[in-house]
Length: 66
Image (cartoon, rainbow, N blue to C red; front, side, top):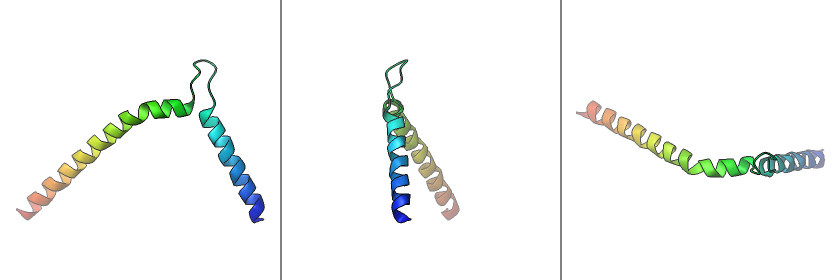
C-alpha cells in the first residue's frame, strides 16, 4: 500500500511541476515565469509590511512601559 501512495504522490508532483512550467501558446510564458517576475515586488511588499508591524509593536511596548 505504501508503494501505491508513493507512486500516486510522485505522479501528482510531476503533473504539478509540468503544469507550472508548461508554456502558454498565446504569449510563450509559463506560470513559473510569471511568479519569478513578480517575486521581487512581493518580497519588497512583505518587507514593508514587516517593518510597519515591528514599528507598531515597538511603539506599543514603549507606551506600556512609559
